[in-house]
Amino acid sequence: MESIDSSEMRQINSNLVLKLIWQRSEISRSEIARLTGMSRSTISAIVSDLIALRLVVEEGGGQVKSGRRPINLHFQHETYSLMGIDIGLQHLTFVVSDLRGQILSKDVQPCDVAGDPESAIALIQKHADKEIEAAANSGRDVIGIGIGVPCPVHPKRMQSPMSADYLPAWKNFDLLDRMVKRYQMPIFFENDANLGALAELWWGRDRGESTNIAFVKLGSQVGAGLIIDGKIHRGSRGMTGEIGQVILNLSDKPEMIAKGSFGTVQSWIDAVIAKGVSSEDLFDEGAFFLGVGLCNLLSLLDLDEVVFGGNFPQPGERLIERMKEGVKLFGANKQDVTLSWSQLGDSQIAVGAATMVLERALNDISVFPEPRKEKPAPLVWKGGRFIHG
Image (cartoon, rainbow, N blue to C red):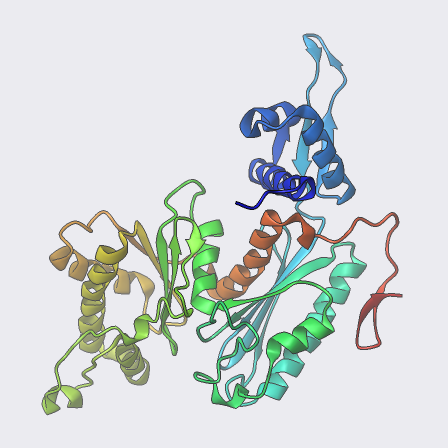
């Protein structure tokens, strides 16, 4: 067993205290000591570091009738910014948020991502440049960039997050390398549906509820993100959640195909998009079988909640009710599972990408920049990167 030296233990303790203050928003040193078992001197040293990073301020103190007013620590969620980028096949969505998930800016740009990588990268960097400069000049430095991509991301092969197996035009484009070289900050990539699930876990539900959920993205692309015990479940190759290929209907009769029959979730979605909202029979049949298919997912993973979202061309509530019929008929022990349409809107993936940066930062205090003694000069582009000049 490897031993942990004092510096490693200090960082572990710092991460624990940081996350606790973020979770509580306001807490006293004595409460931190009670919850963590750390000594008062250890906590004081860590709090001093957090104050220097401008993540925490002290409030309270002074005399009151019954004694001395306690000094509480308050988390400063407005000190830094997070950037999230949702890379779709035909669009780019950008958000900048504070450390509490509040969106400070949002922009959606049409872009032929699948067919024109060079233009896509240029637009990503142009918009990121603008937002990073604006954040720095307002005193809210961006501490990291999270990026959601429309393909599986192999956890051990991050050099090419835009998989050429799914996006052939990206074969010779290393997006990670180009982003890291341009921006001197942490850059994280993740599959878009996984980020939708992460956003749902952090912001779409009351905190403290179940941490076993699925987010199913329906639209021109279909995918599912899984949260198991509060963490993204990726699988060994990043392929978990490829629900688009789940079999719904095995019929191959010519007369059924002529009516718009389907075999998988993706083929059903494609048929609904092609035929529009007028094809009620096709919609209802597919939604029912999707509910039946969910029974398999629920049986295998014992989930508590499934949330749906995406640019699906049918009302969300109608889809949910029809799926519930399938679950009710075939999922004998699954009727207490919550099925719902997400309320996070069309920026959900980008918000999830920014949340990924926040999650990493709260678990690794080194993501935050070193404290500065004075207000920095405006951020400018020089020598191939941004500097304070």
